Each structure stands twice: as structure tokens, then as C-alpha cells.
Image (cartoon, rainbow, N blue to C red; front, side, top):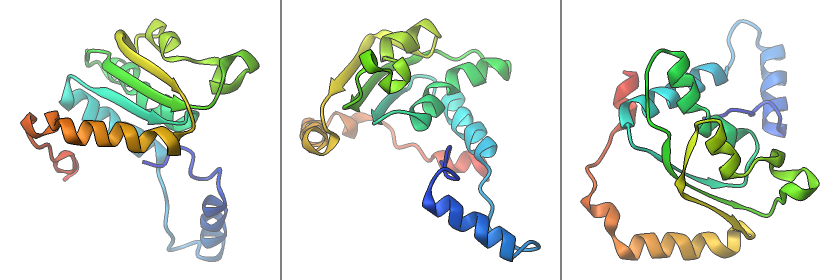
Length: 150
């Protein structure tokens, strides 16, 4: 999913590519990306978010609950959420939006949410190792989300 792809040097490259190839070019459709991610949320039912950083990708993933409701589908809020960030809301970073704030919009349950204020490269390996070695994921059925879009 590429919610803010054009806001990057690679996005500038695609603009140049489209300019030079007006009849045949690569195109990224962020609305379709959002619809597909919302379809995954609608199919999944229970869901959670694990976010590194914030900004557009964070909002993009959280907003699938709201988007599903706009499409006429009632879905539960994301049951849990973890965000690793160095941003601090006191200075306007993090879009002044913590996971507790996301719950006020009906996006995330506040029972299992955790802001991890740390640099991701230092804590992500520890979290991934913990999850992998506890092996709870082995008891979950495998999901093939790409099959929704065939």
C-alpha cells in the first residue's frame, strides 16, 4: 500500500515517467489501495495494528474502520495497537495523535494499545524476537488476503 508515495523522490520519478510516457505508464492508485485495505479489515473482523512511525501510513491503517462504516459495513475497532515512535505530541509531532486519541474516533480499542517511545531500530528486533519465540502465531489459521482481489 502506498498512501503517500508521491511525497517521495520515487514519486517524483513516477511523475517524470508519466510525463515522458503519457500513453503508457505506471500508475499508483492510493484510493484503490485504501479500498483494498478496508476490504481486508471487513473480511478479518478482529484486527490489530503494529505501526512503526506515524503519519499517513498510520492514519491510513487506522481509518479502515471508519471507511468500512461509510461503506455500510459495521466492523469492530482494531482490537489492539502498538506504535513505535520517537515523536512527542507535546511539540505537535505525531500529528498530536496518540493511540488513545484514535480510540475517541472509534478506530482503536483502548484496552490493548501501547505507545512505545523509542527509536525503532533498537526496539523492533526485540519485539519481533519475542513474538517469534513465543510462537502464538503458529496457532492462527493462515490467511491469503490477495485472494480477495482476484
